[in-house]
Length: 119
Image (cartoon, rainbow, N blue to C red; front, top):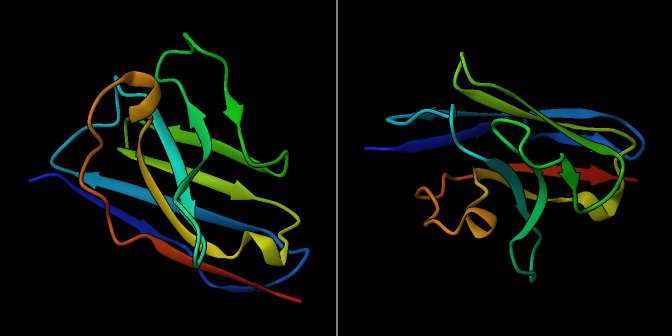
């Protein structure tokens, strides 16, 4: 059974940095286009950033220029590095495939990791 697990979320002060991690069991990141998503209270889940598995598409950050995505296919994990966090970045963050662009079904969602930014 495929399982996604996000970690690294915590309470941080505005302006600080945070790195989130995602690991997968039962599947491999290699060969898949991956992405980070987030969902704030009362809002829809949105894509944060995407990364092609083979650089066939350029890296894209859809939310802002303060986030960077990276991946370790050998270790079967991916990361989201967030800089200069703002209160508006408070959300539950999830990882998954870039299923919309790839026209595939998403892997079952993990529980996400809560990032809370306070001023």
